[in-house]
Image 1 (cartoon, one colour):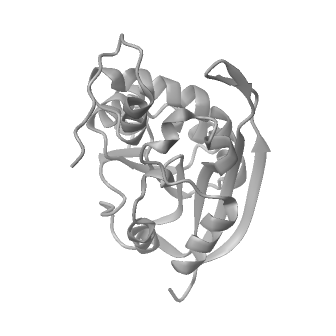
Image 2 (cartoon, rainbow, N blue to C red):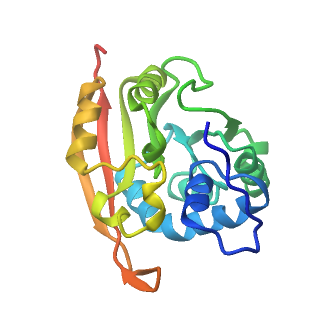
Length: 230
């Protein structure tokens, strides 16, 4: 196993360290990486939430929620939701619990430490599952998609939020353990794993600075349905 690169929160991190932190935020750097993910991924969350067309009584699962900043936006769009969420970073789970004490106490939000290779919920628990900027870290995506199939109700929807491969190549850290996909590649993987492909929504993000250059990222939300007979 490759050793973990250690740096403190005040140092200038190298790309390989950033890649490790984006996969699984940990240690003193976790709060900082969580905030950075929020800043960069806000446009992708906006797109995904718009596409999801939330309805009263929806039961949602988010995989890989970071510090949980965006749960409040979901409830603002549709208050009558039941949201569950898993992340395999202890630090992110604790931060998300601190940031969402009210909805956790009311029972509207259930945050758990967990891995999408073994989702800690019963079969057919949700009618919608989503993840943003997570599939890059699935070395064997079929294992994760099988679990998503299991916890989705028949006809349930899975929303994958990603940036295009071309967008992601602007970041120097993606060469360290990222599995990048084109839209068509991910659509094909979904179909191969029992989903019916629905549609892909694209949106050009506002410019951000990457290594001194101003770049536009392209956000994508890929919609797929669990087959009734799968």
